[in-house]
Every structure is written in C-alpha cells, then in structure tokens.
Image 1 (cartoon, rainbow, N blue to C red):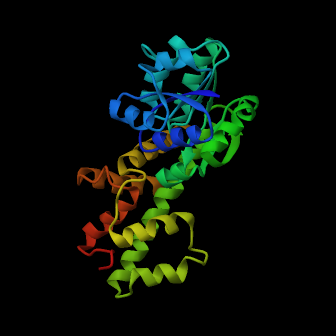
Image 2: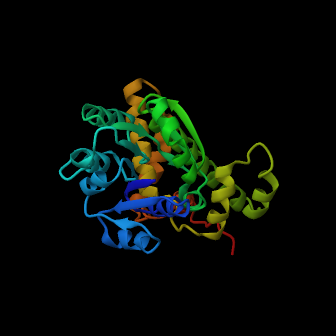
Length: 295
C-alpha cells in the first residue's frame, strides 16, 4: 500500500522504517530536511509538502508534536486538506488535546476525509521494535479498515470510542507514567539517603506489587544517570498541560498531576527539557544534593 507519513521525529522515523520493512511504499514529509533524508536512505519517497503527500496517497499518517502543528499540517496552507481526495483516511498518531482532534476531524469530514486519532505509548524503543500501544478514537469501521497498518507499528491497537477518545486515553496514560516516574524517583532517593543501594531495592521490589513497566524501563536509566531522550521532559509537559486543561474542562480534579507538572516545569527551567522524562529524578537530586545514580 502507498502510505503518506508526515512528521519524522524521534517516533516518526522508526515508524516509517517499520512500514517500509512490511513492504509498504511510504511518501514522507517533514519541515526538517535532514529527517526526510534519513528515511529516504531506508527507501522512503520524499515529498515537498503536506499537500503533495495528500495528492499522492489515500492513507496519510501524521506524527507531530502538538495540537497547533497538526492543525497547520492538516488545515493550513499547503496542508493535507488542500491535496486530499474524498475518501482519504487520515490517521493522526500525534498526542494532542481531545478537543483539537474533534475540531480537525470536523474539518476533514466537511471535505469527505475520514479521520481517526491514534496516539501511541511506548517511546522510541517500542517505536523501533514496532510494539507500541495504540489508542484509537473515531469511526470503528475506519479503525477496522486500517487495523493491519496500525499493527505494523504497534503491539496492540484498541478502539476506545468516538473521535478524541484515543487522545483522552493517551492523557490518562501520560498521567500514570509521569506520576509513576516521580514515585520511583522519590522512593529511590529515600533508599539512597537511608544508605541502601537503589539497585538492590529495584531488584527486590520489581517482581512485587510495586513493579511496573514504567519502573522496569526507567529505573535503570535513573541509576545510570542516563537521560538520553526516548520521551522528552518538554513533551511530557505538553501532555500534562493537555491533561490539566481537559480535566478542568470536564470537572475532573488532577492534584497529583499538577504537582508533577511543577516538577517538570522546574526541570525545564534548569535546561533539562530535552532530557528523557526519567530525569524527573534530577528534581529530587536537586532538592537533596544527592545523586540517586550508583557509581
């Protein structure tokens, strides 16, 4: 199948490579030329704009940083809607505000374009492996039509409801992940300050009730002081901001999320915004003057 793909960042590039490995023809566009060149080396076909991608492809995937970027790419000048034919399917795999998904879908529908929102979880490692969790909102028939394509990039794809439901699910996911990393950091700092090796604490508790996929992925990074981004602090700030706005809009209190958001904002101010979100541990290290990491 000929697939258009717009947005070739940390997540987009490996997703394109998995589509290529599965035998699909992939037409790509990104505002950064170097990103395009990297996937062209793997066999992708370069395009000159979002509009041009849409003119060539009946299935288009977008993977962009936030709501304004998706709106511009889809609804703006030289955007998808200027080039797409009636019946085209748009899969927005960006993590954006649910209300933005609904606004974009409405504009698509008026031009006969079918859209689903399908944000992902798992970060760069699972994007590379093609084992991401994909959360989908929109028409179930469209979801079923593109299910096999989604499963090239993911280990699971679940239809969660109407348009925007995928991004609501992703916000819930991001709240849990952020709070979990903060809890791991807080607990390991307690161990370190009490004179117990955090590595031994990790080994002792990871198989019990406190164990989690988040802890298994992020605890080793924290203990190594390795904050190479799989998912950046600044992107998690974006997601929690969307979660807080959505919570305010629907009347759902998010007090713990607000606290972790302040931690992330502090880290951003300390020039850590491009670090992996496991760098939440640095917040505790700053407070205590003690490193969790083992020498």
